[in-house]
Image (cartoon, rainbow, N blue to C red; front, side, top):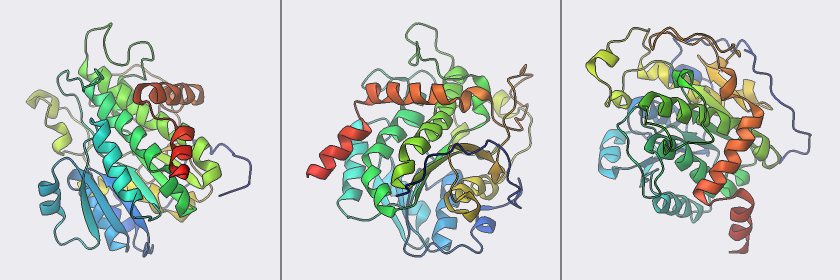
Length: 329
C-alpha cells in the first residue's frame, strides 16, 4: 500500500527500448517472477497462450481461466506452473466461483490479465439481456477484478492489464444504450464500445486501486490473426494492415505486467511495449487504417468514472461492498 497522493501518469511514450517487433519472451528475458502468481483469462490460445508461456518462462505460476477446461489443458500441456480453471465471462455465477476458488487458496495475486474476448459476433444477449461483447469483454472482467480485489491487495504491488484494441476507432461507450435496445445492433460499434470500455476500466481502476498497491494498464496488442477473427467474413479478413505474430502480440501485455519502467505508473493505454501517445479524433478511412496512438474517448477520466458506476449497477458488484463482505468472512 502506498501513502503518496495519486498522480496521473502522462499519456506519453517513455522510450522503453522495445518496439512492434519485440516478443513476449524478449520482454521477460531479464525478469524473475519466481513466487509470483498470475491469472490470465483465455490464456490458452492466440496471444493468451504466448502470454502464459512468457510469464511461466520467467518463473510465475499462471492460472488460466477458460470456458473449455479440456481444450485449455491440452493447449498448455508442457508449460511449467500452469493451472486451468473453468471460467465463462458471460456467466456471473461462473465468475464468482472462479474467483472464490482462488481466494480459498489464500494466495496473493500479483498479475491479472484480462485477455479473453470476442469480436464482431452476431447479436447475442446473456441471461441478463446484456449485449455479448460488452458483457464478455468488459463486464465479465469488471466483476472478476472486483471479486479478486483482496488477493490483488495482498500482493502489495499488483498489476491488472486490460486488453483493448484498435477497435476503439469504432466509437466509445454509449451510456444511453449500451445494449442496443434503442438502436439497431452494429457489431463494429458494439466492438468499439467494448474495447473503449476496456481502456476506460484501466483508467478508473488505477485510481481506485492505487491506495491498495494495485496499478492498471490497457493494451492494444496489434493486429494479429487469431480465433478472435472467427466471426469475420473472408472480405473482412482480407482488409489490409500489417500483422504481428502472436509472440509479438503478447509482448505489450507482458511488458505492462512486468516492466520495472512502469513502477509508480498506471492508468495509461499502451502499444508496441510503450505508453501510447494521445491522438485527436480523426476522419476514419476504413478498417485497414492503423492507429498510431489512443483516441480521447478511450482515456477520458470523466467517462471512466461514469463507466465504473454503470458497471457496478449492471453487475450488482461494488468494490466497497465486496471488500467488506470478504473481511467479515
